[in-house]
Image 1 (cartoon, rainbow, N blue to C red):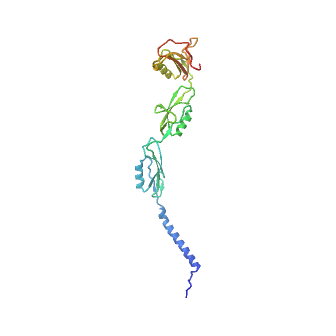
Image 2: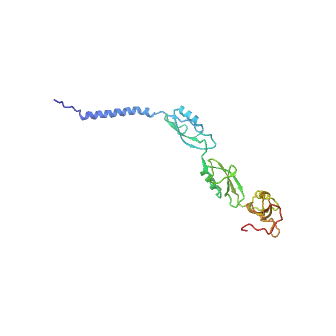
Image 3: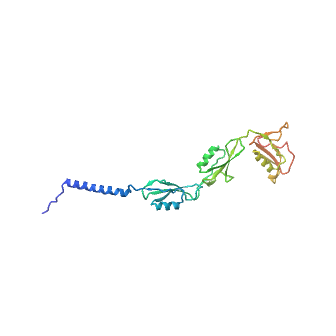
Length: 269
């Protein structure tokens, strides 16, 4: 009453399976060139130096996709200028490739000013570079520690360590030129106002040391010097000499007075 189902021989099923696999392989092989755009390539245009808007217009016109991947900062270029691109200009790539861009930031990031005082010049420059700061002018001042940093300046003024400033800022360094071998007679500060004496000390590359006040002082700049160390002349009356960078101590009073040989010496003398 029931008919027995007829099964195909095994070799027929095997041939059918092989034929199906071969057909799928042929379809894939034929369409592979279309999928991968085999033999098709386009050159990547040069967009470094262009604005982001211009770069996107050029790339989209040539069928590229655009992704801003990173940003950096340089003060020599306008904001949103293209700094780098990948793939590079003139590279041959498949159509519809994505081009990754690095753009210039609109505002520089901030960085902390390092403490460079007492650093050697070489170490100071390396530290500035590590903080993405730029070495500016070098100013030399008389001091014993040759080429060590005596002061750090930003926009012409001293700057404290830890102060936040824009990356790319120029930092000038005041460096020691070492103790000069040449000496000169000790200037005569007696009778000068404190301001005049201080200006003369700076002009002669000397350093102002201890300042002692005799009596009440109402106007320091216009107070008068009546004693100094080193003295202009020694015990034998011969002129004393002084080297650049050496220290001068002063005694001042509000009114002019005769030199006081009994004046107390500064601490440590």
